[in-house]
Length: 197
Image (cartoon, rainbow, N blue to C red; front, side):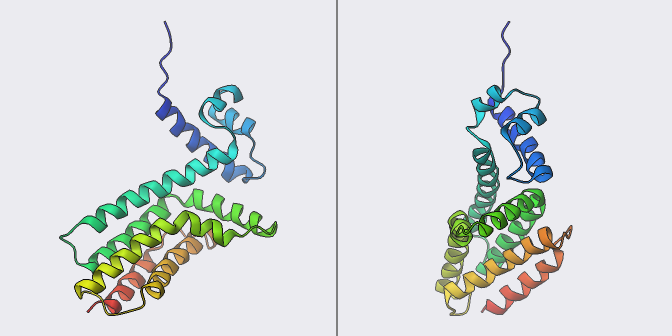
């Protein structure tokens, strides 16, 4: 009798255990073998799911960002909400997701610091990964200005302000090692209230 392997379930388990390895060892010191060992599988089996540790790492980031984007698209599409409510809900949803993925953020930050030391343009890499998020924020703002629910402001500057609150949350969670970013919720509400008509 053959064994049925649920590939999606196995892939998710690998991603979770690989994150443990990245957190414990750092991206540079994590190896494909260490990940396979933590998963209780052979390297050969691990190759069925991923080509290398960078692919595992990128999948972890992609999985988190896809979840965030799906949540934000639902909020953006909700016609029962006014623009200030949408902006507040979008930003607090992001805060919740950041808090849930604090360990992954720690690994990503360490990875970016390592790249920065080697002379790699980390700003470009971060912008490439977050451009869709920034686009959602900007499109909600543009819609709000068009509907007369937000003041006439420079959308790029507004987008930078809102994204800056997200960056502050990451800093507080990862660098300052706070368990919560609840104090930023008030800052978000205050910023959105100042923009509302």
